[in-house]
Amino acid sequence: TVSVGESGTLRLVHVSDAHYHPFATACEDVPRGAGPCTHRNTTQFLASVLHVERPDLVAFTGDVIDGDSSPPQLAMAQLYGVAGARPWAASLGNHDEESTLSRDEVLAYVTTLRGSLTEHGPVKGSPGNFYLDVVAAGAAAAGEAAMPAHVAAPDARRAVDGEKGAPELNASGRSEPSKEGEAAGGKLVVARLVFFDSRKDHVRQMISDAQLAWFVETVGSLPRVPTLAFYHIPLHEYEAERPRDCPRSR
Image 1 (cartoon, rainbow, N blue to C red):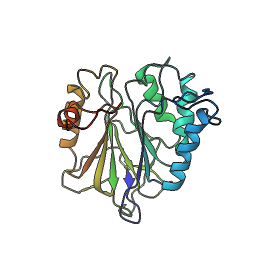
Image 2 (image 1 turned 45 degrees about the horizontal axis):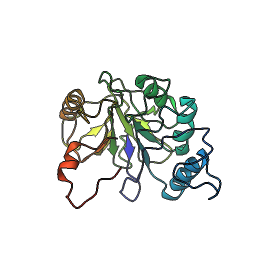
Image 3 (image 1 turned 90 degrees about the horizontal axis):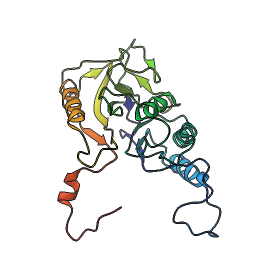
Image 4 (image 1 turned 120 degrees about the vertical axis):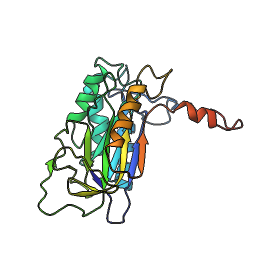
């Protein structure tokens, strides 16, 4: 679970498309001679953003690495490592599987890193589908014991507790709440964050039928709360609704 802060808000920092190369000695689109520019510019910038913003959760949504990120484990450890002790979660983009690791191996490694609340989801060939429940601060029921954050729930259900530095998993590891706003594992669920995988074959479908079926089935078994989705590849519907005088962005 992730818990809202004392102010009653959940503060997020969203990071995407780092395409991080741990031994890069130059930066793309930065003229030579403009100053030193290496891979450290990326990690130092992100670390400074997190220091200023102090988010309750960092959301990574894909293409942290690509085919030039070598070795991929070092690249992921350094880039995701900017979160420090803060809880964070990550879904994958279309380029994350271009290294020497398969998509499943990339996601499996991400789940082992410090602070990661990422789950290996149940959709075959598309592992980065999972959700995090957002709970009301101080809503823990008396006597409920919490599992440490690195323990994986078997059905890709994770919870982040609202107090910074103390992410928790629902005490039961899985829950079957039925009423709107009902407590999950002794905590009142007030919102939900859903992470969708963006596969390499995204051209035809940004979110596959199997992913959609997982989402519909999962949401149907959970309390109805405001929900925010994170995914890497924009849906076709964005293009359909784009005003004609609005240029396409890269």
